[in-house]
Length: 352
Image 1 (cartoon, rainbow, N blue to C red):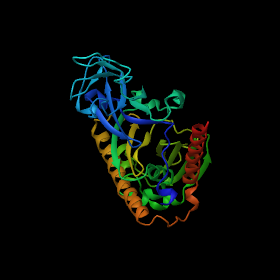
Image 2 (image 1 turned 180 degrees about the horizontal axis):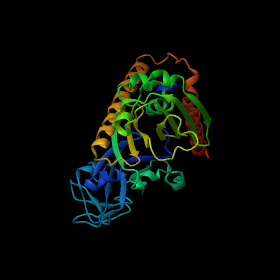
Image 3 (image 1 turned 45 degrees about the vertical axis):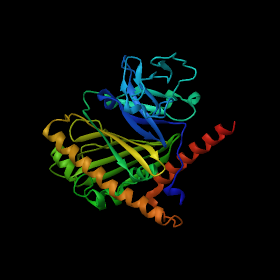
Image 4 (image 1 turned 120 degrees about the vertical axis):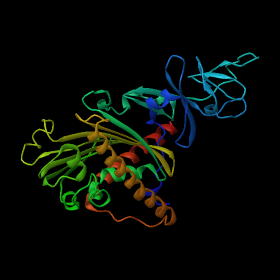
């Protein structure tokens, strides 16, 4: 299959396994990088991740229940702590050297549960993507997750070339296609990925912007995107009334400012968990304005899903047909380069 449609999976990296609040409600079973994982909190509230397989009779641990020590298998009652060590073997000696389950390092930060699926000795918490807006009261946040039947890099491609917005999302966040095609664009390769900023000066506001901020006329609008390999994109978007100094100060009062985190955690080679958060300055999630704006964004992401899954389907049917590159694809190309560099480094580490 063409490389663009079946990018290999990077294992030595941090991925979002779940939003932290998901496991507040109980055990979560999730497939990540082709492996079945169970996520839970122990009796002290600490988040943990284990292989979703009891070592006794190969039953999914996710069919069990949490307990003070960690998680108890629902079949024969063996209990394991967050490190995968058996702490209770009912009616028999615990024998923790024999009865154990593979554990994965997990870090809870900014309402995200980050998991390291690769070489556990190489897990470096300094590499976790920072997104402080989840912790700021001034930036109310909506959290979501969708399942996509496609290689995860199709989502990164989608985010790093926004010329699709006016066509796919014309009735919500997109607006005028010409404003996107003619935007002023600055693109660069970064140490860990790629970055671009687009300016659409004196452009009509898209419908969702009018709904959220009540724009009456044209605005100066920006889209600032940073890809952090292998699976994260940080977004700063927004707009101010035309001619009010948006270039000089995007943080000024008035207008609309939103911060988004996008993360495509591979489930398999051809499926991924799309985690997204939308933080909008000064607009409460449960307000009528917030509900309407977030509904538009959710609709837009489902519109993306249609196109991304269709891409994967055609790529699978026609594995040897190439893509024709456009000038707008520069950030996409830089993102793929960053991913390939990360893959090469992982192969080098494995050979050491």
